Length: 418
Image (cartoon, rainbow, N blue to C red; front, side):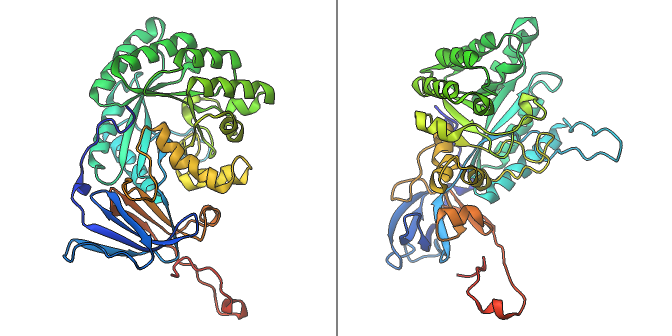
């Protein structure tokens, strides 16, 4: 049971058949793709497919010049704190982000739509519970989730701060209440608890009670602690994910390799954050990302997420899955195709979502970007068309023009050209 444990029909439940014509696939083929009832109905050579029944219930989108890909997903967001980057007057301390439920709902909605425009048709958002906000932030995010039905699938991770000792008793009860309210995943940060092992045991017990997935924050810079976590969590269904695990990259290669082998043997996935860490770990000045190449070589399922979206942890965070893939490729952690896989197939696997292939019968969760191949799409992915549940839910169009000159006669790229 993953993030999609409670499918919710939205406005996209009844949509017209849609024909995506002249799209280029990653393997170089140019095809038509017909969509219906939220799934891919048929894939054929360009010009071979009709939109569907001759009625007002069919539509066509010309994708000449576009590369068609399985849509990315966002496996590690913090929508409750998104768009709250400190804006203090010169010499004045930055005010803390507002915890007003209406504002949290508003920025959650804005952040989710921003990421939808980038192509992410599903997102997993970590939401803090306990402390002074108790469950109010979670309630606001769940309200935003309901308002976004049919546009994007937003699921929530309940993130308690402390779970052990007297201080953690109330939060442990609150965690169970959070799952009853609608949170679908148990999260947290054992690194910040006085008893990290006890914290993990408490999280796993609650997840087992409710049959839900686990997604924990950890820097993973302590091999012994990571080994204990892997031993405790191994085999838990529906699954355990750790992130951002940047500390693995700071360990000696042999030590990190053994840790990766333990994670793979335990069936634990890792979500890396190539765009930078998030505020949950509260480690100012710590940068870097998990060693994706090493983890994948060990057989660990790896996803890449965005983490902070213009909040205190990263005031310029873009929340763009394609940028996360670009950074992995540019830093040599993965070839372009494999880098994109971490934000698409890898992210969907971590989130418990159905596989997407551009073949008949698979979910119609698609992203069209200007470009001839994945590498060019990651390099200059300005224009995008996003398909969720078989209908176009977002478009971004960019036009590149040059002033008159001899160079303008060359066949230079224009994002708007077909």
